[in-house]
Image 1: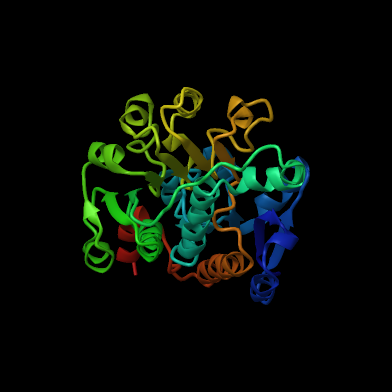
Image 2 (image 1 turned 120 degrees about the vertical axis):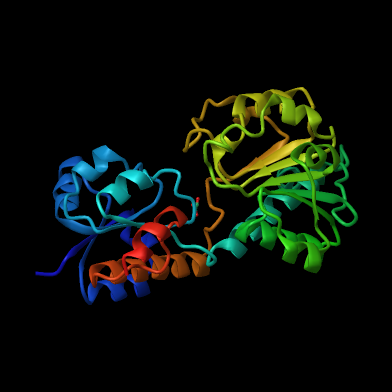
Length: 326
Ligand code: GLV
């Protein structure tokens, strides 16, 4: 009998090439499933490819045959890595393949704000032809300062693109990134210095105990009134209530958000009433090419685990543990 692979995505959202790759050796089962169907499937599954589902003791209890939790994405704050490690379950991510897509989406949000793209679209549809009101001006990116918080795989790609826009680049990270300094003239600064001096502040950190709520009222107060905050990382990195207040009170000019405290963000959330925000539904990596590459990477990791081999994209916390055993 073939091993089973549970995929927490609808069939249409997991690229056919990856399905074909898996189907040679496994039965692949997709969402949507009823609670009962899910429990039946996960009880028999040797591998789980997961999106943002919480993988904790409760989930693992239902999945006694599991060898690997392969995240379809790069953040793994929704996975209790320690609980997986204790049970000998690999945890993998899909690094590198999505960095450019997230960096591009970061710029989609930045340009939507600085060039008022969403407002302009509404204006064309309802007002332009009336000739009553001129459309307000945007602001240039050239010569402005971008502050990149977290300058790893994705942050570095944001720096590369910012350099193309002829922006000045500041970054803040626990680890120095000499490559972005050399190639894109980026400067490592303290968080406060970055917040005070940037026209665009953009977040590219994982969600950890250290980064949860790292942008709160105090940090927002340090930003320029003309500055924009961009978040394509994880919602809880920002204190969303403090951000909503800062936006209402004009403490900052606007925000571009792809991630939220709670997803989907409820329709009655006050953020949705504001005009100085551009909001997208957690689609940083959401391009055809990138989602295909992510699916192939997740499938590749699963195939390694099904063959009893250590998969290539283990989360850092597990590298020590599992690579030492081989
Ligand atoms: C998306 O949110 C990811 O973790 O890659």
